[in-house]
Amino acid sequence: MAMQPLLDTTSRTLITDLQSLGLRLADADADGVGLHSRRGGAGPSDHKAISIGGQTIMVPIHTHAAGLSPFSARPPGPEGVTTLLQDGRAVAEIAFPRQPRFYRMQTFDGVPYWKIALLHGRDTLATTVLQTCIRYRDRRTACQFCAIGQSLDAGRTVAHKTPDMLAEVARAAVLLDGVRHMVMTTGTPNIDDRGAAVLCDSAFAVKAAIDLPIQVQCEPPRDPAWYARLHAAGADSLGMHLEGATQAVRERIMPGKATVSVERYMEAFAHAVPVFGRGQVSTYILAGLGDTPNEILALSARLVALGVYPFVVPFVPISGTPLQDHPAPAPAFMRAVLGPLGAMLRDAAMSSSDVKAGCARCGACSSLSAYEH
Image (cartoon, rainbow, N blue to C red; front, side, top):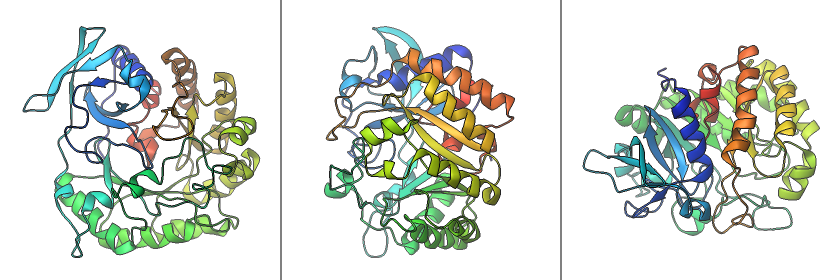
């Protein structure tokens, strides 16, 4: 599986800064809401994919902070290339990936493929199987950063992507656009399997249609037997996302999800790693929610010791959520986390390049992989 090229120190710093500060882009919506750029919904929302130094990354463009960013770019030319400016000074050449060919297709009953799954980064197919969550509509329990219902309310997706839909789109994305792995996340439908059952059905259908590495993502199910079921259904890796590094931050930012405590997650990781393998279980940590760099690194050390890859990304406030005015972490904050974390991963011989599928494999939402080398 082809990997994105290694970055020099200057490019690595530039990407870290871009992902914290965002990009002012003229006519950001000109290419269609929900296709090239993302507003609302699950995943890297309010972002746009750009390529810099040969690496495709997701950069905030629709956020308040992006409107104040020192980085700007003019609309690209016919080849999708333009100049990145910092305070009006040219600092790099960037490119905007072309629209994937599979976006032009639809199912037999008329559902556009891009409403079922989207291209993330350069070669990652991503979908939210269930675009609803038991906590989202109640702000007393909802994650304050979550916008899972926004794209559904706007008609840019469907509530439940059936196994047949996912298999059809995955096959097309591989054959037409060279997709190399797939991420399946889900809203939480119940407090028992927490989405593992629907992910089993989805992974099985995709693997029957096309040989594609798959990561599934859900909260820890109550019964650890679900890990073996997910693996047997075709999932190659597993994501169970803490988001906050400390229980206090999690209870403040995501009161419903925090009922599954940090320690309960650690127990779940200990059950899942023997099933999927060392480095094939990961967790998403949003830097900037209130945890200090030392707190994020302390948790990361525990995770790495268990064989879990801690995928640390800068928090991006999404419009229309309670945290829309929450500041993104400063570039210096991110470097204080990613530098030591990269060294930690090197010492543990754990690398995103060894992850078979998923967000860490894609790497577009964080510059962490560049700090591993």
